[in-house]
Structure formats: C-alpha cells, structure tokens
Length: 128
Length: 429
Image 1 (tube, rainbow over the protein chains, first blue to last red):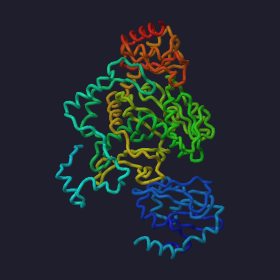
Image 2: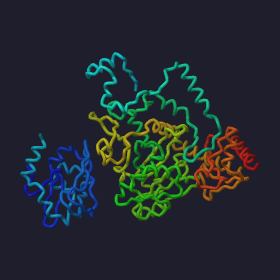
Image 3: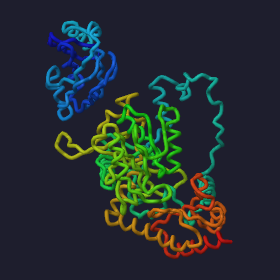
Image 4: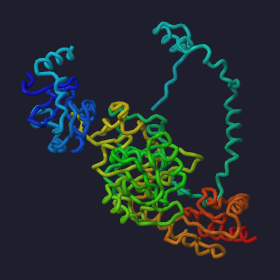
C-alpha cells in the first residue's frame, strides 16, 4: 500500500534517500485526509533546519497543515510545478507531487523514521 | 436581520431543558470572591425621560460649524442615497453574516467593494476591509514582515501621519520589530510612505518604489481615496501594499469612528494578506454566488499561525464606501477631487497675511504659518462657529504659528471668503 523504498514520519511525510540527498513529500493518506489540495507554500531554497522545523504549508478546501522537515538538512530544490498544479499532490503524492529536496542531511535522523510496514500499521491505528 | 427576543417563558423552558433552575446557576463556576456584587445601574426610567436626556447630551455637539479640520479625516458631502441604502435593515446590523447560505447580499456587497477598491488604487486584490486607517498601517507592516521573513525592520517615511506612526508604535510595542524613520530601504521589510503627505504635500514615490524593489523591500503606500481622482495611484507608483483611511468615502465624521481601513495588494502577496476576502464562484447548479475565500490564512483554521487576528471587517462602512464610489463613478470622483483642489488653491491665494509652508504642490490640505500662535487662532474662531484647522505644534511637527487647513467640495466661495477674512482679523490683531 505504501512504497517499500521510502521512510515515513508520524506527520505523514515520506522521505526518499537518493545517495547524499533526500526527497520529501506527503503520503497518499495525508493527501486523502486533506481533500482537494488548492495551494502549497514551499520553502525557499537554502532553508536549513533540524528535524521537526517548519518547512512548508499545504492548503486544501477544508484545512491548512504544516509540513515539517522530516530530517535535518538544507533545501536545495523545490517542486515548482506545485505552484501552478497543487493537485499533483492528490494525483501523485509519492511521485510528481514531491515537495522539496534536502542536502547536508542529518543521516542519523533517518533512524527515527518508520518503514512502510510500520507506517501502514500507524495509519491503521490513526484511522480508528 | 430581525432580532427576536426571548420571553420569560422561553427562558424558563431553556433552563429546565438543561437542568438548572435559575439563570445565575450558569455562572456557578465563577468564584464568589471575583463576582460583581452590584452592577451599580440606576433603576429604569421612562422612554420619554431617556429621549430627553439623550437629546440634551447630543445638543452639546456643534454639528453645523464650518470645519477646516483634516489630518486624515475629511468633511466631504455624503449623497442622500448612501444613507437610504446603507440603513436598509438587510444591511444595518452590528453583526456581519458571512454564511453563504443566508448572506449572499452581504457577501456580494463585500465582493463589489473589493473590486471598487482595486479599480480605485490600480492594485490586484483588496480585502473585505479593516477597522480603520491606523490598523491598516500596522497590518501592512505585519504583512511585509511575513513576506520578508528574514527581515525585522520597518522604515517610516516622514510623509506619514504622526497619528499612524504612534499607532504603529503601540501595535508593535511587544514585538521584536525595529522601526526607523527615513527613506532608506536597505534591509527593511518595507518602507511606508503617505501621499499626500501629512502636511498635504503631493509626492511621487515611483522612484523610491524602484529603489525598494532593488533592495528586496516592499513599498507600502498610504493614500487619500478622494485624491486618486486626480493624482497618481499606489498601483502606478509600484506599491506592493496600498492602505488608507476610507472615512472620506461616504462615512460621516464621528469622534473616533466607526471608520474604514482599506488594504489592497498584488496577487503574488495575497496569501499573506490579513482579513476576510469575499470571492465569486458557482454553486452546484452553476449559478453565480459569493463566499469567503482563502480562509486558510485566518485564525479559525490556522490558529496561532494565522496571518492576523482580524476575523471580521467593517462591512457597513465598506458598504457605504461602495455606494459612494458607485454613485460618483470615475467622472464624479474626478470632479470632487478637482473641486477640493481648486478651492484649496483659491483659499491659499487669499491668505497673503501668512506664509504657505508647503514647498511642493498640495491636494486639498496645506499649512499656513500665521503671525500668531495657531492654537490661539483656533480657539478664537471656534467661538465664531468655525473650526479653523489643526495647529501643527500639537503634533510637534511645526512652528507654533503653523495651521493645517483642509478644504473640501462642501466649502462655498462665500465660506472661503468669510473664513479668510476672519482668519486675517484674528491672526493679525
């Protein structure tokens, strides 16, 4: 149900590790809970922070939610396509709907994240 | 909206339903020690007595004096239709209903108001309005700080109304914000300017706007709505945020309000804008309708991370401004502005016994230096039923002889001649 190659946070973000850098987005479960996403406010490239710092905001027709840095690092690329097409987050949360890419990451933070099975169990719990 | 009071029988039933015997039981959780023992309110009096009382109080107001007071608030003529329409019971309520299912008229009037403000200012988006001009200054500064997140400096240009400057200080007293006076945009979140300046002088801030944008700084322009019939608009000067006191647009002068805070901006900044925004949309059957939009900025959704604590608007005053602007239209606004300007120039030409302090062109307000302290002149003319203007020394921005005079389309040539003659005899005696 959730891609095996990704890591997950309790804030429903996913992290893809690509060598020294990481790609971050929100999970299909989060996108579905938010409903139709109308706007994504992305961080500026160069934003550096630690795990849990504010990084982005997602607005849907019914709510606005913050997206945090799932691990420490520096934003070096953002998904500019989301500015014009925020619906990509609903349509393709694990692929075209990615948010930003991090470099200089704090690798040890990855240990605190969940794998796909653990996240699936976490979501199941949340759903009740 | 009709107000339906509850009867004592209704109250009894409601109390019974929730299982308490007396209304006072609802306040049981408030400790006795901090509860009011007495309201100290006199026994009721008859309607007739109340009316007589209120009339005696309101009789103390000088409603018919000839006024040249300005400084941000102006005595313009209000067409009768403004009252006739805005006092209709559908609109005349202290509470603004925003629910689209029951308030399409209110929401449409807000939407039309926003559109009128955009056309007036040459800006792209206006909000549903704020409490008054001073609040708009603070909200614009706070908005600039949200857009320029890494900066915490606000620059106040000397053209700014000193009252607004004071209000900005009060609003930001407990915030980590550096406020400096001047016009250097370096490292600032924004530079706030005002046109016409407090002393009435007209300026063109286009060049300063360019300097601001090169420095990554926003240009905030505080404007006088009526003047835009004649002078360059905030949008034409490259403003990122345009703000104003909207009292001059069909809202009577009253001691402290209610007035109208106008705020407009560019599309790229709209998500950082404070306050409510009405938008046009289609309902499920494809019919045009109006709703509040971009609400994810607001505190009922965003909580502590909301753009501002403003969660209402000045709907009734905004409606009056809309009616006023609609009645005048583009031509009417130009005519009012021309009257204000040319009458002020006429009065200036009559004040040869004093010196005009402004070195730049003015719109409808200017400063004259009198041979006698302005405060004394004002007191003497007040006895004649004339409010001569504002002694600038009260703001510590001018000489004791400096009197700031505002002229509007309401002043006739006779008014101006009479005023000039009295002013001369009082200040040269």
